[in-house]
Amino acid sequence: MSHQLLDRLRAVDVAEKIGPLAKPANAALLEEWQRSGVRFVSSADQLTDRYYDAVRELFDCIAPAAGETPILHEGGIYHGCWLESTGTINAELLSRFLPSVTTATYSAFARYQRDDGLFPYKVTPQGPAFNQIQLVTPLARSVWNHFRLNRLDAGWLTEMFGAMSRYDAWLARHRDTLGTGAVEAFSTYDTGHDLSSRFWHVPDSPFANDPTRYDPDNPILPFIAPDLTANVACQRDYLGAIADHLGGDGNAWRQKAEASRVALYEQCFDPDDVFFYDRDRHGRLVRVQSDNLLRVLACEVGDADGFAEALARYLLNTRKFFAKFPLTSIALDDPRFDPTFGQNSWNGPTNFLTLIRTPHAFEHHGHHVELSWIMQPTLSALFNADRFPQTLSPYTGQAGFTEKYSPSILCLLDFIERLSGIVPRPDGAIWFTSLLPKPVLHKHENWETGYARRVGGTSYELINTALGGEIYRNGELICRFPAGIRVMLDQSGALLGLVCVTSRQVDGVLTFQGQDHAFRILPNEQIAFESGSWSRTASPGLVLPS
Image (cartoon, rainbow, N blue to C red; front, side, top):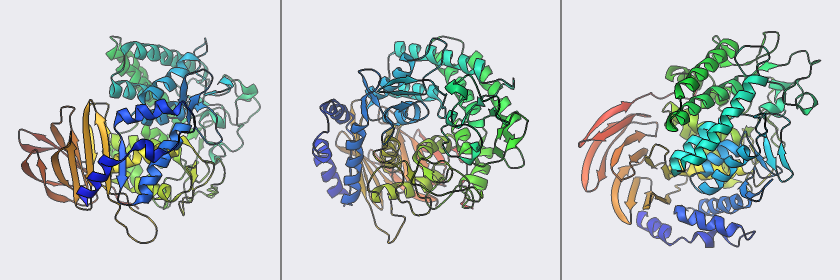
């Protein structure tokens, strides 16, 4: 089967698989995609077809907004680019496939920044909008990863650094009215948590649609918000890294980041629940357990032990967020949980924006195996869906609200690459992972895969069968390894090490450039290869579903 898959992978014509382009501008996108060398095939035609459905519909989500340059749009009913999603995490994923569009998307927010430092919360064909802030994924992290991955010009990074620094000053000036050092939410839309019971009896928009004001007659506003505060803390850490690179004072930013984390724990963390909650203006915690927790963790808050406890108590708990099709937007055992998925709701359904924000939190702490338990049912749902929706039923995986939604399109592309493909990393490493996507419902099937990508002028191919993976470099076989393993190479093609991405111990042999290297590796363990021998570099353990 491996040779048949390899032949099919090498023969696939991306343009033919995508079919007729919906608009003339898509020709440039197809050309850029082909330069990436990214191709995918599966032993199941259904998977192959759905992959190229995603590529075709992704192209349809790229178009001009306020200006003439095409940028990434949210898709579905959302005509434009939102800072909380399209303008951060969506574009960060797109960076591996269409980097020019990612650059243009980030640049749009700097271009339309107000004179006082406020970024638009969205950029639409009608122009930039400033009604609220709407923050989740830290822009500075996305910008820094995009810059490093694609080796961009320092002039662009300097421009983005200046814009993000001015925005940080705006938030400090206008969103800390209680003087706690944290960041405040003035409305539901400030965090994009539409319909969430987290914000019951709070207005959707800031007072008078002015992001510097909250309703003075509301009895509980402002909220000291953990996701907004964590966002700023993480932003400041990455602004520090960017400042260092540009020859500035990164320590000043790191001190600000630490002050934000101190405020986050003082104001929003409940040590008994081990959860982050909003705090209202009267000092009371708003005890609604939402995906706020994951948002904070994705901002690199907390240590390894804290993350493992969050997994055990919440994210992998089937009474909390670990539904059959995880992760829910509100804890399953909350009496306000509502699984209705036919609308834009953050009060129960599984949202694709949550799913594409998830990998960073898990990978930051080395919990790759547990991440696969979220990716597998998500891909299974997308392979069976008739569209790319915003929401899923947490019980059945049925596609919910809207269609042609770029976060779910990018989720499919990203999860296939993380699970069974080739991922170039900002630090220069290249990941080759041998896990097969598999169905969640009904009978077991073997879905074997082939994946190709060009990295730094070198062409790589990865063939995955039930037995394991084969890596080809410029057409030549260089590596064989068992299933359940991630192989890491550097830019020159040298072997860096392995990660175990399955829940069992793997005793096996890696054959690299004609030499056999036996190894034993535990779930989530990472081992480095140097001078012909292995050494353990990380072993965070495995957290079981609860």
